[in-house]
Structure formats: C-alpha cells, structure tokens
Image (cartoon, rainbow, N blue to C red; front, top):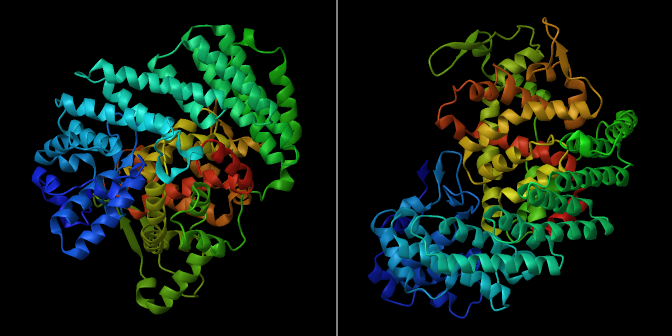
Length: 625
C-alpha cells in the first residue's frame, strides 16, 4: 500500500521547535471535547486560517495534528490499533502510525509531555510507543491520557465527538480497551492500569444502573475478558438486565445480555447455569419469531437460529422435546414462504433517496449512512451488458467476428471468447464471455466515485468497528448462526481499507450464506455422492440449479453479478482464485475485489432494509447514531 500523502508537509519532519514556537493547542483551548473527530475538525480549520495568513510553521503543525487525530481507531486490533481513514481503489491511503517512525515518533513522545488536552496527549504518546516499543514513558502517557479523557466525560466535564452523551459515552470503553492492551505490554506501570480498570468497572456499573445497554454490554464483556470484577456479580447483572429487556419486548437486547451471563458462567465452569442462559437466548429467538409472525421470511430465520442455539446446549440441559416443537413450527412457516419470495428485491427507483443521503452525507446519522451505502449503486444485469456488447459490436465490427482468449498472469488460457454470430444475435453465453471488460470500468466508477468516498465519510464521522458489524450480522438472516464474527471482522476490515483481509474473510462466506438462505425457504441444498454420503452443493450448482429462487430473493441483476464476480471463469472468478491462492497481493485492491466486498455488504443488508426503522431503533439503543 502506498500512502496517498495529499499534504506534502505530512511527509516532512515537524520538529519539537516547530511545536513549541507557538501555542499548538490554541485551537482546542477551552474546548471540552476529548473526541478525536472534534479535535481534527478544529485543527483542520486552524490549518486553513494559518495558510491564509502565510504562517507555514503553524499550518504544518496543524496539518500533522489533523492527520493523527483522523486515524481509524481500532482498539480491538492489538497489532494495528490505528488504520488509514481512507484507501483508494488504486492503492493509495491516508497516513498510519508507522508512517511516522524514527525521529518524528520520538518528537511526538516529547511533545506529548507538554500537551494539556488528555486525548491529544494520549494520541501523540501512543504513536510514539507504537514506533518505539521501549519508550515506557510514552506508554504511560498514553494510558494516563486515555484514563483522564474517560474520567472527564463520566464526571460531566467533557464529551466525546459531537457533545452528545447519549450516543458517545460508550466510546469511553474503546479508550479503556486501548489502555488495557498497552497495560499488558512489558514495562507498563501497574498504577495507571489500575485506574483504567476502576474506570471500566464504573462504566459498567453506571450502564447497569441506567439500563444503558450500549455502555453496560461493552464494559461487561471487556471486564470479563480482563478478569477485573467478580464474575458471578456480572452474571447476575446481565441476567437482570436481560429480564428487563425482555419485559420491554426488546428480545435482541435480552439475547445479548443472556449471552454475557452465559459467558460469565462459562468462566466459572458452571455448566448448568451456562446452559440455562443459552436456553434463554434460544427463547429470545422464538419470541422474535412470534412477534414477526406476519413475515414468514423473518419468522423462519428466527426459528432456525433458535434451533441452532438449542443444539449448542448439552442434551441433558435442554427442555425435552423443545427442538422438535420448533422444527414443526419451522416447517409450517416454510410453507408460507412462496408468497414472500420477492422480499429482498428492490426494483423501485432508489436514486432520489440515495442522492438525498449522499448530498448531505456528512453529518448524517450512522443508520442513514449504512442504509445509503447499501443502496448507493444500481446493480446491472445481463440485459444491460447485452445492450452494451451489441453497441460495441456495431462500432467495432471486425473485432466482434474474431475468436479471442483470456489469459492469466502466467499466460495460461483460462477462457475463450467466441466470435459473435453474423446474424447479430447475442446469446446469454456471448454476454457472459464478453461482459467482464465492461464490468471492470463500471466497478472502477462505482468504487472510486461512490463506495469509497461514502465509507470515508462514515469512518471520519462515526465509530465503526467489529461490534457494529457483529450487530448487523446477527440481525441479518443472510448470515448463518456461528458465522457472525467472520462477517463482522471482514466488513470492519473492508471499511478500514484492508482489502486483503476483507476478501479472505468475506468471499469464502458467500457460498454458505446462499445455501443458508435457500435452506430457510425449505430447499434441499445437498447432494448424494457416489459413496452414498451427503454433502453440500457448490456455488456453481447454487447459481444454476437454484438460480430461480435466488433471483426471486435478491434480484436477477444481483445474482448475475455474483456469478460473474465470484464464480465464472469468463468473469473474474475471485472465489476460486482466493481459495487456491492464485490472487496476487495487488489484485486484492482491484476495483472488482472492492466491489465484490461491497456487494456482499449489500446482500447482508438486504433483509434488513425492509424493516429498517426497527433496525434503526436497535442501532440507536446501542449508541450508533
């Protein structure tokens, strides 16, 4: 990956004298925010003013501070806690901490000692400690700065981004998570780490007392992971919170809290209590199915999740006959699915809506941004490409009547493109053989002109991480139970611009998700082998034998794109190339690979869009606004 480096001054050394030659904290003096987006906005405006005044040193310092405040914060990633805020389709990206190794990192550590704003101090010190692992003082300054930031917010003396406590206090858990990761490193002082743990316990307790799930859930899980509080106490709180949510009709909230209680009992090796909590999780899915009885598609998804959840519980701890009862309900609901087979297709013109979202993407609620991103591009199907190929054949007559071949990087022939018929007829096979070049240009336009810019805005203005995508994956019936984490991490990496990791996680999941959706509508997606064993059918069979139901679910255009991008040898065949290790490093950042990841995101979002108002309520409850 190459750094985009839009600002030349970012690649030049900014010395300690540059920082101390004026008050570099003046733009944030008296500003009570400890949120990095807020700080970056202040420094962006300060830079513009300095440039207009001809103050080159101040402009250079402000530009650098803007850059480091705009890192993509990923506290759950111990190896790379900060990623680029933007990655373009041609491999350029914004800065990351390793771009400042050497003298600049050392200067950051020195300047951190002089910095008053605790969040800025923590960020400067953290970049120094990442690049200089033996810099013990910078590690401690990072932890203390993060602690102080969270304490000020909890005391009501500061705020995170936007100054809206109802949707940003939970960000304190992410600050503390980063502090705890550093605290486990060699050479860390236990005293500030002890304060970090105290603050985390305080956040969990306040979240529980106020019944704020966005705070309690995150803090409780981190508390359990680091073994800070009494595990039995957390189990009791989570169970009480789950009952509270269930009584309000919030089955999703109840399910998450029962899982926290189950995790706590697993730590204490209380198998019976753990199983009891998991049974409650299954019943949350059952109640969801009952609440969504009017939608057979949604109800069958919830029933399948309930059955899968019960199967994870040891037989001796399951309610006798419960799985059989749910299977009978599932079969009855599956019989109602045929009237609902067009649920996920969006044939209406959504251009006006998407344009309204994109016209003012900056400042929009996260839910609107996620919705808009899923529908940001119209997906083209086979008839679109037939028309394009016909137009090209009329313009370039000679080229259309000559056979040609497609070669891989090693020169092997991987596909043949036969000449078009002299009658002018363009068959479906002709389209499949010839549309990949047209698709390449369309994917480039989509990724560069819409998808990546939209993701850039989302990353810049919202806290996007594994937890968000885990929530979406759990809500979406496109994701089979037990595969939510693969989708969550994969989508998080895609949003962060790490296409290699995103493709390797998301692409292999697609085939299984298509099978899962077909199973939900009662279809048998297995085959009997010659040895009389049963195995799942592969993607090629799904796209041929089961094409009609898939097209009814997702639309013919989407399934055509799936075929050409992931499976067809005449297309891009990226599923097989990733599976067999033939994808080169650069290929992962191709526009088609990026478009393919977005297409998987769109398919995950498709079953949520029809009930988006309900999804928005869940997102808002978790603090994603």
